Image 1 (cartoon, rainbow, N blue to C red):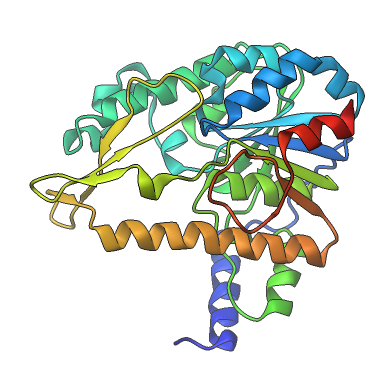
Image 2 (image 1 turned 45 degrees about the horizontal axis):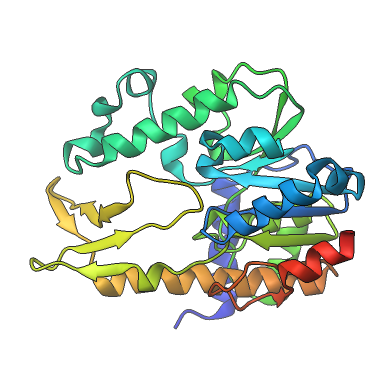
Length: 311
């Protein structure tokens, strides 16, 4: 096992190479924000927002934080979230040619269903072009100058750049890197990056909804040992079932193994634990208002309790 000291030294080297120093600091005006993930349970939250009144929630000082493909849903234009974040490289790493013709993406050559995924990614960006309210968009500094970000010509969107360099090592060292905004906990899921960036932006209380994280019960192993994952969202999704494939070193198509999948899930929840630890350290509150779900790192509150505290 690599010692904490060596991990700290390796992280420092990564930060020196990958991170950008002295990024402009963004300070949110609000103190409370709701991160809306895309799990099925978000439906109940959104429905109650419409019932109680979205503007009333804003009058109370609460804003919304959306992720990934949320802009493709009609709820996006109802809630008009002020904050938005993408983390996954697939949302950024493509060319003008791929944006015009998703079938040209290199991944589609060995994973045919990725063309549908790229079409949804393209649609996500096209909908963001229609935003007619002030929005703060968090983008990893690695992708700040990619094709699609440079060509999102919407004056209503303000880009905030952050360093996503995974930090390991001694606790005091991790805390220092976080405070300098040079790195981040492991964010195997975009929600963790939202939480961390919300804390860095000055929010005092961050609520989580739609964080079902039931990936482990939505998989099956096919007769040829291909793992099939069924994604579940609060919105209708025609591209729900995915064979979990990867590109091997020789360019051929390979299958993701079950132990690789569960290792990834371990990183998801380990990342949440680290973010929860740091939130406690800097006296921020992260409250999970997801009905059910499998994230156990944060304090829980029911939707009823949440809305009762506002109204």
